[in-house]
Length: 342
Image (cartoon, rainbow, N blue to C red; front, side, top):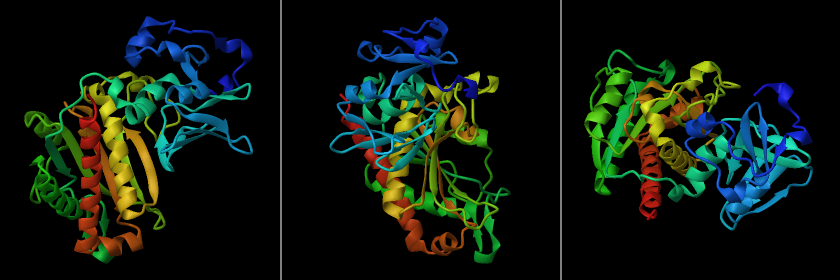
């Protein structure tokens, strides 16, 4: 979104707006429910929805916090905080990256309709989406392998390819004991291309794909956990400020956008609850292993091997088991949520 579009002028309000462009409605694969069409604006052709009305549609209280910098949606179990002109919300303190910044106009805060569809609905009301996926066969992808060692920490004798394989095998055991069928992209130190990993999941007719990785950074202070869903069509990935023409391409994995968001949310939440963070949030990226999947998928970064305290922990089998247990809890929560959808 161009900076010149802010702040939004009163004249940009549109009452009971239906998407003026059929192409836009088709691209987003939805039209806003009638009850939410009363207070909308458009910014650079992007429909935006009044967060006060959005919150009420979910049965939540809506109000500005003191200082008028944070707008809150709140129910008995859920608190969602939005800042002004920001691409990150916090759902029960878990950062979730949006496709577009929020917009303030005349003392009210607005959310892009695409983020209502791609973030809030999948997490809060996934039952509104058709074609609920099955959740029996899980493909666990241990990142890197063979000639590709991934991130390294020589001082602590750590290589990402070994860590991902160790945690993947531990996760496999936990999932199988809970009744899941598990397919591994690799169960030894072998090299697989990114395309091969997605192809294996598709040949196995997977219900879910979970790719495990560990981070590294030039700064030894960087730390924490982060999980990625495939970026929806027409949106910029979380590391980029705005969409470009390259983001107009749609991938097979985008057919599962709501479920990609739901599994990524549950995995990131479980990791932070189990391991304590820091929580770097639920993000979006067009990772190669996620693009061509014929099932929901998530790629998760399970800590920085370049961070000394994390590296020390990763040398412990007990800590690696905690990581696997937290991943299992996230997948189990996702299965439970799907099973509640009629």
